[in-house]
Length: 199
View: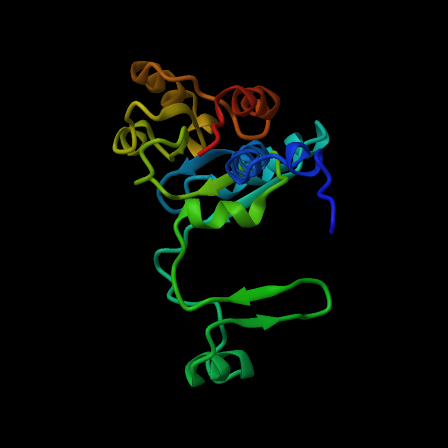
């Protein structure tokens, strides 16, 4: 007759507790997000590039997600990866010398992408104006252009308009802090540290 270890079942946490801890750990590992929105050629890429450099200098791990509404695919027509997808592959992975690219046959939302970015401190999004809960930095060429993006989620202005004294004066009417994307990047990065959120 086998004797059960009386402490075995008592030492093992219940499955629900394990699952709750796993979910808690996953939430803790999620990055904090902030979006940079604006029209084409408004300075979005420069802002994100400068923020990546400054946040990395501060010791953070940073990622990006770029919304590409005008592009249906990054794959090259008639290349092998494109042919595999068209043949019905549910996932195609390309492995060039210095990167790995995974092609999946659907558009993922921000929340679906985040589990693949666990361990990053910040993710900077380019676009995604429709994500109402995300704090946003508006990049614009003029104050008039910026006004079309203004709502309660906007935490700062930046972009081309910060190069113009005239537009900078007008920006005061928007009651939102304005930062130059290169000269004031340290202040903008500090704002990101304060305003970025887990999503």
